[in-house]
Image (cartoon, rainbow, N blue to C red; front, top):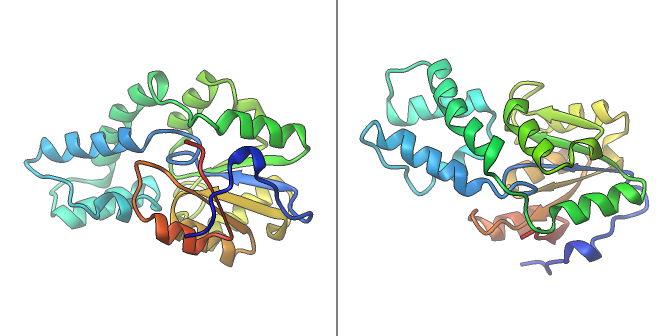
Length: 220
């Protein structure tokens, strides 16, 4: 696995002017929250999340996750019903409880003070993201917020990263992407961006993240 660079020492090549962040598992310490939502949701239906379920859904948008879940578990429910149930479960957690990773805010403030444009590209809806960002006082640090699955395809599709660059008004090759999911990092690289892996203690696949990234850090 690549050397883990402490966030205080993280620097980028001179051509990078913009840094795009994932939220869940990268800036937000929220993966445990989603794991519990999965347990509670499936448990009400007499099911248990398989070991590979979280990894399979992490790069997907909200609707794609609902469609995958219905197909995977043969549920006689609509994507809309699943999305609404998950949304209500998550709103409470994001509004009141989800913490930032310990090193997230210092890194964001350092990059902003250094003149970088900052963006968010996340599978979480703005209805979830904004209350949490506001509670932690960091919303104003970002120049753009893009929701995968709503503003474009999922994060494992290079198209969402090109949309993110366009929203920020910069070419893709001027962007670095910090994400904790290998598929998202690979898609960002295909789009022309610099993939920076973020190791999350709640997520598996650390070797895959390292393999997909040009640089590696952790915000825990």
